[in-house]
Length: 251
Ligand code: 6PG
Image 1 (tube, rainbow, N blue to C red):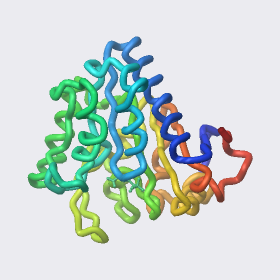
Image 2 (image 1 turned 45 degrees about the vertical axis):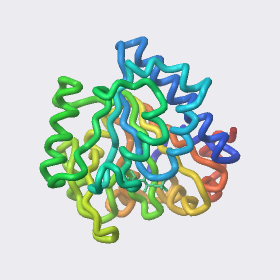
Image 3 (image 1 turned 120 degrees about the vertical axis):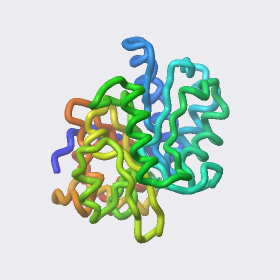
Image 4 (image 1 turned 30 degrees about the vertical axis):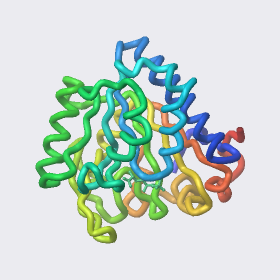
């Protein structure tokens, strides 16, 4: 799989988290300057939490005009919105409750109703926000699962992978969980996409994703390559252990 050389390796999670926060702040402020607002989709999972925590603390918190930032999520688990497994709940606790973002700027999927209806409603909300049939997020954050999933695009689910919808509901048998996820069709229309990957447990899948043969159905993360936007991989040294040296920037 061809990946332009935008893979940045950091010595540890604190260094990656600060660098990611700086990159995100730069993208947000440049976007607000250009179009008066910035619309981002947050990732679920644990990896981004350290980045959210950096963004929620001075001086980083004070570098953004939060009134002009609009939040969505790249996926959501269909569990109650006050459940620690809920991606909205986690980001609200770590970041959103600590910055002055207006409630009306926050758009999470309804995780407590029929997943099919929730996906339809979320898709509608996104299109209404952008006023476009093919919405273009300014920034989408993503993680990478050890089995090659990203957002809630899981191996073997080629329906979600190849959908021309922008949001679909999926069922993850291994977790016995329904989820709502943005599709590659939507994600690849974004202006900036940032993958955040840390820990030794991700070394094998990161190498397969970036350097292995293309196998989108088994490694859905390989389906993410913005058609016109920028794709960044911010990884720590442990996750990068198996990457060929010539493809990366060491920080
Ligand atoms: C989710 C995420 C998912 C996550 C990966 C990595 O809702 O689970 O969107 O795609 O990013 O599973 O998760 P960790 O960061 O916890 O390793």
